[in-house]
Image (cartoon, rainbow, N blue to C red; front, side, top):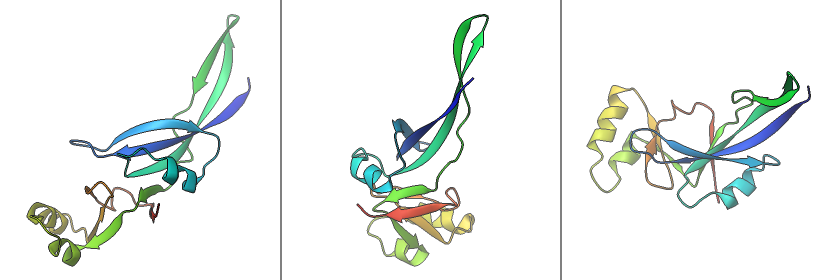
Amino acid sequence: MTARIIKYVAYLYPGIMVTEESTKEVAVRSTQTQITEAPEGAFGFFYFDVIATDVSVDGELYETRSSRNHISPTYFIDAELLDMEAVKALEGDHDRLLRNMENSDIGSVIRTRRGNFMSPTEYPDYSIVRS
């Protein structure tokens, strides 16, 4: 049995109800590479590892994989952190967002490069990076 670590990047996309993601195997964790290679629709990404092991059962070889581990911070590409006053100053109607911020006691939101808003409470370990 030989275990190996497989590294992945997961790109994040706006979804209807939840954030969608696509994953890709990577050789190394290189934030600048992922920023440059991020698909056009992605607003962020994070890394994770999977441990894979080959196991022989009755002479047949099977691969087993762990769940995600060594999960990195989430990197938001060209995003901005906005407090309530900044959200109020935005063009357009953001009353629902402001009510949700007040009701959930969220002092700020992350506006992604795609224009959607994310709560920092959902991503307690995040970083805003520039392309």
